[in-house]
Each structure stands twice: as structure tokens, then as C-alpha cells.
Length: 151
Image 1 (cartoon, rainbow, N blue to C red):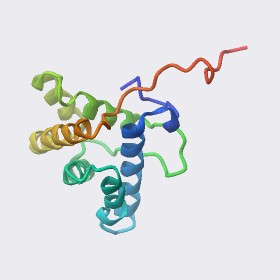
Image 2 (cartoon, one colour; image 1 turned 45 degrees about the horizontal axis):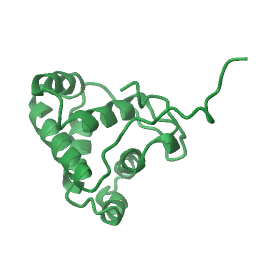
Image 3 (cartoon, one colour; image 1 turned 90 degrees about the vertical axis):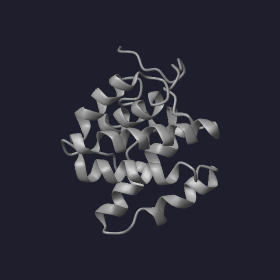
Image 4 (cartoon, rainbow, N blue to C red; image 1 turned 90 degrees about the horizontal axis):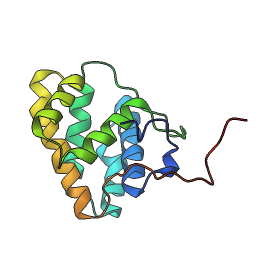
């Protein structure tokens, strides 16, 4: 999670940027009482990620209804990755390789018990679809040209 936390969204790879954009648009549409599918579906289509689209939507719906605490997502204009966005990026990134008991423990911390299995299925299926099209979210690399050092 810490590899993504407070990083500039622009420092993420395409997959990470797409997920941040999609999460923020999903939240905005749902908050306005609209179905988020129409807002984010075209972007998933553009990036040949329609196989992951229903899993992303399911993940967000489960988090919206069954999160153990209120999740906070950045506004569309926010330039940095929030804590909950970083957590979700991390879970999607490791969903294909981490031990299932580790993933289950992490999921239990963010959704109620009845939603753990469905949200893990959504994470894994979305991760698989993203890997298939070369969009797996990766932590940003250190860029010394953009680093700021205390004076």
C-alpha cells in the first residue's frame, strides 16, 4: 500500500491511473444517483478491459454497501493517491499472487464478513483482466528528477 500512498497520480503506470480515474468517477456518479457504468464503461472499452469491467463495478458496489468504514476517494482534480485508493491498488496488484489467507485477512479489514469472498473474487478477476491487457497496476519507480529534498 505504501508504494502507492500519497504518490502523484501521474507517477503511476497506465493501469494505476485508469483505476484511480475509474474509482473516482464511479464514486462521483454513484453520489449523484447515476449508474456509474455509463461514466466509466467507455474507458474500459478504450483500453480493451471490458473483461474486467463487471468485476470493477462489483468491487466498487460491495465496497460502497459493505465497507467496515467509510472509504475516502480523491476528487477528480486531486493529484495524489489517497489512503483507500492506495489500499485498493495494492490489493488488485497482489490479488493473483498473494496467499489466499493473507488476502482474506486484508479483505476482512475493509468489508464485512458476508462480502469477503465476493470482493476477493472481484479483485482477482479484475487483476487477471488487467494483466491480460498489460495494465497491471505497478508502484511508481523512484524518479530522481522529480524528487524533492529538504533544504
